[in-house]
Each structure stands twice: as C-alpha cells, then as structure tokens.
Amino acid sequence: MQLDSDLRYAIERQEFELHYQPFVALATNKLVGFEALIRWRHPERGLVSPTEFIPVAEDSGLIVAIGDWVMHEACQQLRKWQTLFPETTALKMSINLASHQVRESNLIEKLDRVLAATGIVGSSICLEITESTLMDRSELTIDKLRQLRARNIQLSIDDFGQGYSSLGYLRRFPINTLKIDRAFIDRMAADAENLEIVRTIVVLAKTLSMNVVAEGVENQQQVTMLKQLDCKFAQGYFFSRPLPVLALEQAIATKI
Ligand code: G
Ligand code: G
Ligand code: MN
Ligand code: NA
Image (cartoon, rainbow, N blue to C red; front, side):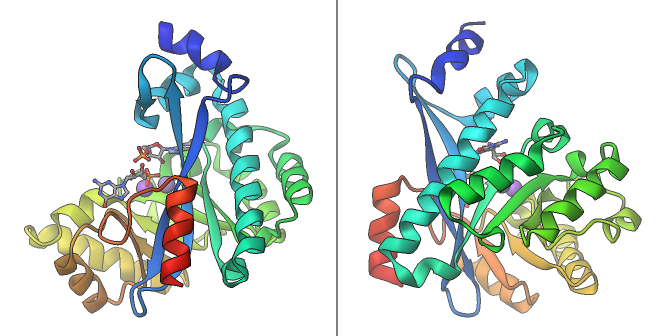
C-alpha cells in the first residue's frame, strides 16, 4: 500500500507534527496540561489523520520509531514552553503510547534518555495507555509500569470504559488517571444508562484514588453534568481543539 511505503520516509522527511489539546480543571477552567496528538502532513494527501496511519504504522512496526519521535518532540516542546511561560512548569504533557511501545524491552531506557536530553522531569509527563495494552501480558506490563512510576511518570488509561479491562485487575496496576472514553460523554445527556456509566467510572476512580478526565466534552450541558458527578478534569472541543504550536502559544498567553 502507498501509505505504508510513504510512512517509512515520513520521519526523515519531517512530515510529522504534533498538535496539542489542552485539558482543564472543571472547578476553575484552568489549564492543567495538554495531550500531544500526531499529524502527518503528506506532500500529496495533505493532513492525514492518525486514525488512518497509526493502524498502518502498528502493522508494519514503524509505530516504534514514530513513537520515539513523538516522545522526544513532545518533551522538547514542553521544555520550550516551561522556559517561555514560567507559569507552565506545573503543566503536564500527555503522550499516547501504542502497545508495541509498551512491549519494547528498552522503553524505560529510551524514556530516561529523552527526559535527560530534553531536561524534563518524570512528573511532568503522563503516558496514555489503552485498556487493551494494559490487559495484554499483564505481569510484564505491571513491572514496567512500576518502573515508570518510580520515575514519577504519570500513567493514564485512555478510552476507558470500552470494556477490555477487568475491574478486579485495575487496582493491581499503578495507574494515576482514567480518561473516560468520549463515546460515553457524547451520549450522556440523551441516555440515562450512559450517564450511569460515567457516574460509575467517576466513583470507581475515586475508590481507587485515581484522577478522572472526561474526554470529548463539547458543550456547557456536559460540563454542568460532569461537575454534578464530581468529575474533576475535562478535555474536548468545548475548551479547545488540538492546536498547532503557535495557536496554542497564543491561547496560553491570553488565558493563563
Ligand atoms: O487526534 P485524533 O483524534 O485525530 O487522534 C485519533 C487517534 O490517534 C486517537 O486514538 C489518538 O489516541 C491516536 N493518536 C494520536 N496521536 C498519537 C500518537 O502520538 N501515538 C499514538 N500511538 N496514537 C496517537
Ligand atoms: O483516543 P484518544 O483519546 O487519544 O483520542 C484523542 C482524539 O480525540 C484527538 O485526536 C482529538 O482530535 C479527538 N477529540 C478531542 N476532543 C474532542 C471532542 O470534543 N469531540 C470529538 N468528536 N473529538 C475530540
Ligand atoms: Mn489519548
Ligand atoms: Na481517549
């Protein structure tokens, strides 16, 4: 497939860029951090969505090299922002990790090198892992997650609620945050069952001493409902779309 062979050269041709989507504290509307989201500026196709090329990159194994680039780029960008905007030192950079990356034997060494090279402390980054990654070869995974936590790196479960994780297992993993899948937030207002699922996830997070982030928040009604459920953090188009560097810098400069 064309996409596959083009993908092989995309890193050296510098066709990838990261956009950053803020997430906020619902009580104050204040910026808490951003999620790094990759974009591929293909010379002929224009901006290709990660939903198109991430699965291709996972199949070919290229996801590891792409993921290495993302880790370095996101940490380097965070360091620049910490210098440019001293108010941002407390902000977190959230980075998506594909399951191939979690399974890599030298993940920890790579992260140590990226943090040292960019001057970022572990507590400034958060790694987003999906439920299916977590459930796969769980003993090995738990050990690796513990090593990450020993560096104060934060860990979240992305797209939580899709149903892969056994709730009994959840407390064995050293996870800091559950990110509620946006499908639940989307249907929450119209559908009582979805509302109950969101409420249950918020309570579950509290029981397990985890943070909870509602994803895909698009309107004030959802904000109001989430506050009533005592959900502390949110991310979504209502607050901001994922933004390229310059646009995000303007947003930070005006809002902090
Ligand atoms: O940004 P957008 O909604 O188009 O992202 C679509 C999907 O691509 C999401 O599931 C998101 O987690 C994933 N994605 C975005 N950036 C990265 C990345 O850097 N690495 C991995 N593994 N997935 C990513
Ligand atoms: O799977 P993951 O949570 O990493 O996916 C993040 C993706 O969700 C981003 O690519 C982003 O474009 C998308 N996204 C973020 N906020 C919203 C939103 O409010 N509505 C919708 N439909 N998509 C969103
Ligand atoms: Mn994510
Ligand atoms: Na998600």
